[in-house]
Image (tube, rainbow, N blue to C red; front, side, top):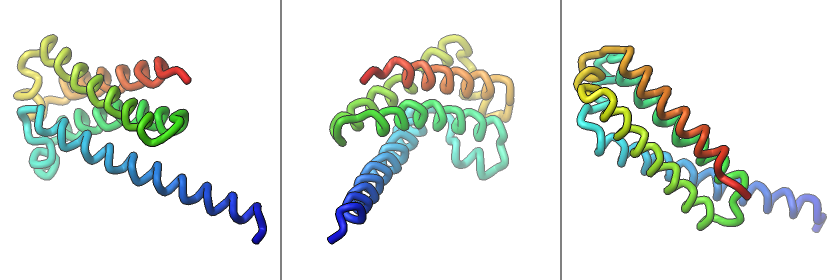
Length: 137
């Protein structure tokens, strides 16, 4: 057997494993995030509430930026999952801080107010970028 094709298939297998686990981590993040927030993001998005889409989209970016860093630098799946957990907690803290700054945040997102949703989204992305940058090898 040609060793270069063997290395290729091992790389593809590793890719599929890490990618699959990362997708599951994102699904778990979304499930936890929407359980924590008082507003119902997917119901609101189905109703064409732009504010809900912006706020959930920012949270997804804020989570997946450090998760992507964890995938790229982890020494194993356990390592990746630990850093994914750190990213999840960081996003929940970011949401909590945003709600402390804007106590009516959830109600305003439900009402379709875009400005608070943009603020929440920006907080999530900023925390995600800083979290990813702070992950050291």
